[in-house]
Image 1: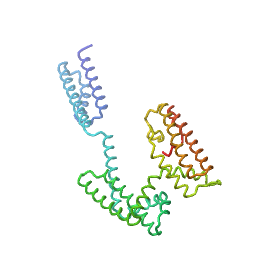
Image 2: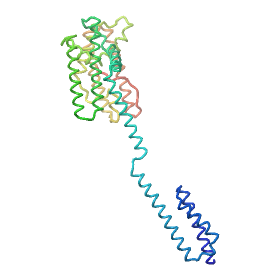
Image 3: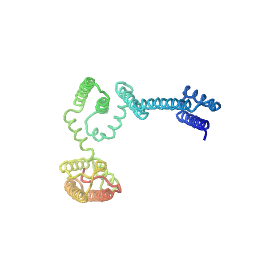
Image 4: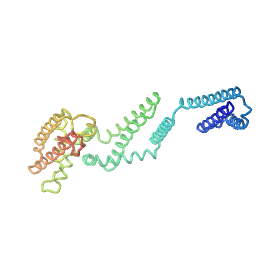
Length: 334
């Protein structure tokens, strides 16, 4: 191959290489486009180019390519050192959540929006404390006032939790807690004025016995259409019996709450121990219940206990096998 053809071939290859490189990087580089044009013109006049001058031209072209590449690398490096798109989105979501929380916090200080919280609490209190209100010697207006005070106390607790999570300044948190404590004290005084210390003690007991009342409700419903329905006095005494037995016994390992057992290992020994302790509690409850229930009612309670035990045993068996399982609630007044 002649020197002239060699030079021509080298220039053509360089032209194609530089063109492909510029396209792949999508560079809008005027100097590079100008050089490509010059090289294209140079092909038609390559017969006039000596090998030594073409070599010099190739070196200059290589240096230009290297410079362009280094420029791109430095731009890319600069982008990588800044926050990524995912980080920016995460930060934006965090700011949006905090903005929503700020609006929620502000609603506690708005009289109209605060009434929304109070109305919701009043509905809950009506359902949960209806029996308690009937036991009080109060007028309808006094009961409504009592409900309002109770709802205000609940909303105040919610306000304290939410503001405690939102505020970041220590002084602001201390001021908020001082304000909440003062308002809670005033509501406590109002509660005492309405029902007295004995009434407050009765309310505490009523609240403590709430989970046991749910179990008595189940028995009461099952007997409501029989010849032996439970009277109100029997119901009250049975709730107290459930509470007394339930609070006097501590499971070695309580397996009644499925949510608290997630991720925990439950052995066959754990299940057998739990079921044995459950039998002891149920037996103690039957002894207590026999003081207030007749024979038919007591038999119905024993059937309810047996059904719950079978459900719990089946659920724990499925859980140990990894099947999840569906079962009843834990027994023994727990």
